[in-house]
Structures are given as C-alpha cells and as structure tokens.
Amino acid sequence: MTETARTLWIRHPLACADERAAGGVVIAGTRIVEAVPAGGQPSQAVDETFDASRHVLLPGLVNTHHHFYQTLTRAYSPALNKELFPWLTTLYDVWANLDESQLALASELAMVELLMSGCTTVADHHYVFSGALLNAIDQQVETARRLGVRAALTRGSMSVGRDDGGLPPQSVVQDEQTIIDDSQRLIERYHERGDGAMVTLALAPCSPFSVSRELMQESARLAEMHDVRLHTHLAETEDETDYCQRLFGMRPLDYLEDCGWLSNRSWLAHGIHFNDDEVQRLGRAGTGIAHCPSSNMVLGSGMCRTLELEAAGAPVGLAVDGSASNDHSNLAGEMRQAMLLGRLRYSPSELTHDAVIRWATRGSARCLGRDDIGGLEPGQQADLALFRLDELRFSGAENPLAALLLCGAHRADRVMVAGRWRVVDALPCDVDLEALMARHDEAARRLRAAL
Image 1 (cartoon, rainbow, N blue to C red):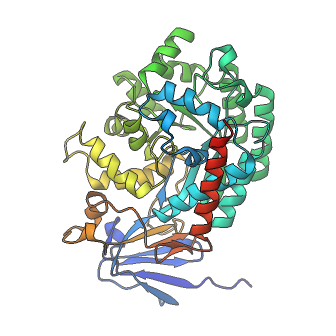
Image 2: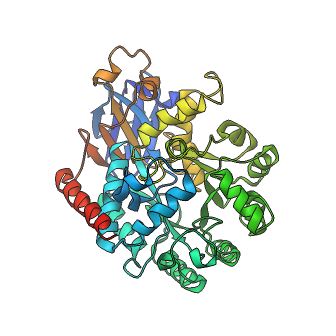
Image 3: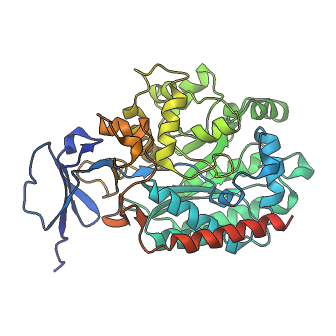
C-alpha cells in the first residue's frame, strides 16, 4: 500500500495570476489538486498551510531560450555596441576556448539566477562543442538534477565554419554524423516523457548560417523518429534574411519549411523579421516563438510581432536569451522588458501585463510542448513562484499583479518545483551563492585570459 501524499494549502495569496485560484492552491505530492476560490476553503482537510497573504502567486515561470555558457562573457568590452553578426564573430573566438569546468559553473550560475527570479523550468541552447567540451549536455543534466529544477535542454550544433562561408571558427564545428550520433545518445539516455518530466531533450542546430541543409533535414527526421522537439534561431536580423536569400535563394522561413521544420514540433528563438504571410503560416503550423526582448534591444535586432503571431495561432513564450546579449538571466525582469518594448508597437490596452504573464507561463510551456506546467489549475505540476512586494520599488502600488511588471519585480521570495521548495526567503536551497560567484568569476577570468 502506498502512503498518501501530504497536502499543503498555499493559503489566500495577496493576488493570484489565475482568478479561479484567488484563495490559493492545494498541493499533494508533485501536483496541484485543488484551486481554492477567493475567500474559500479547501474542500477537504489539509495537512499543512502556508500563509501567502503577503505574496503574489504565479505559476512557475518558464524560460524558452538561453545560452548558459554566455554568463562567462557578460559586458565583454570587445563585443560591446555591435550588431549580431560582428558581435558573434568577436565572441566565437572566446567561446572556442570553453572547457567543461567553465561550462559547469556557467550552467549552475545561470540556472540559479533563473530560479531566484521565479523560473521553475530552465531552457538552454548549447551549440559550442570543441575538443575540450564534448559532454556539455551531460553536465547540464547533472546540474539541473542537483538544483531540482525542470530543464528543457537542447543538443545544439554547428557544422559550417569560416572555411565554408559560415561564422564560427573551425574548432567548434563538428561533422554531421558526430552530431547526429551524439544527439541520439542524449535522447536515449536523458529524455523523459509524460507529465512531470524533469529533463527533456530537443535537437537544435544553431542557425541557418552555421549548419548545413543536410543537418537541418536529418535533425528533423531524427526528432520525428524519437518524438522530441526542434529548436533554432530564426529571423533574428535582416542580415540573416540577406544571407539566406544569397545562399539558398529563399527567405529564412521558406528555408525552414524546405528542411521539414515548419510544424508544431518546432519553436524558434527571436522570430522578428516575418512578413504578414509568414506570420499566418507560422500560426497554421503551430510553430512556437521564443520572444527575447532584452537581447533584441541590446543587439538592435528589431521587435517581434508577438500579438499578431499569437492571434494567428503560434505559441509565444518568453526568454532571457544568452547572458552576453542581455546581460542577465532574470525572467521576472524579462517580463517587464517584454511589456515595455511591446508597447512601442502595440497600444497599452492591447499589450497588457496579463498578456506578458501568460507568455512567461502558459505560452512558454506550449513552446516547449508541455501542457502540465504553466498554470494553476488542478492536475498541473506544483511549480509556483511567490513574490513579496516589500521593497521600496513597490511602495504605494495598488494592483499587486500589475506591480510585478510595472514596478520591476526581479527576485522571488519562494519558488516551488514539483512540490518542493527550491527558493526560501529569496535564497536558493542548498547553494552557497558567495562561493558560486567566486568560482564563476574566476572561470570567466580564465576564459578571457586564454585568448
């Protein structure tokens, strides 16, 4: 006989992202089992309660795109004030020297930073594989499991180097068979399926200008065979559009479709430069978009057509992107950026704080192919983010939910993943932050010194 899971009522939050759970949620094991209406009580007796009367309750935030290793090259002087292509060519030579110990520290710091911002599902797009960095994804799986976060990890790749007209140096380019063989190994070893999966794997050739057509096509075939998702950068800049038209004779989305990627199995980072017809095609296909507002601003890439994409049927999620183009890993902060940037394109009545919270939770979950996270209704995984409004920035705020974005929330007080508290009193559990930062800073200095 199995022991019945103990129940916990997150009781009467100050505000809640879901009106149906305004009285809180009841958790048993790893799931939400009841949403309590405003002023109500659980339908059955509970074992424990947590007084949330000073907290704003959200579903755990879900990140859809990042490059953990880039935390080692934040605010790197030679790459400042550049657009995407020259920014990349400057930094590729630095990243080519990454080793496994540096990546491990970069991944841990990025995951902890995300977790502290209320993010319960972290995502990474790692595509730098050199002779000193062959087991990057294995390390990231180990780190995610140790920290107790959900992780959507992708086996990225680059197969076209500078010798063949691509941007990356040859030292981080791999041949197609090596990439496919390792992708299959990682899927078979780590990919979890079904509700509650803690680690999922996807295939993620870096971009049209760093991989071959054959690799794009073979990745799509392998993803369908193993029923995993596909991810890549697409339509980030006009330079990319020009590159695709010059090399392939077609626009980026046409090339993507030609390679077998235009489907609801795929989600794309950035997705800025789509025309009206392409927006509709993406919507019909159900292809997701990872919106990266801070990165788009830092690199001057442009503004994503978020509301049109969403209206057409394309899932829209939120992402911090790499910490060398953001330069932080704070998903709560990214919500504010998404709202402010979006209001340069849309009216405030169209792009509301509620819409952005939706992107950061349920929309992001859809991009990752998940329907068991991103919400507060019964049956969802017990992934929660609770924010207190007790800093100077919140003083005088009348609407607690809107205040998270308008006043600039950046740090969660409590974070729960799969029914377990992973942040308590604004600090991550079982992590020595001071020691982690010291080791990480030393790794960054060592990486720069290798040039």
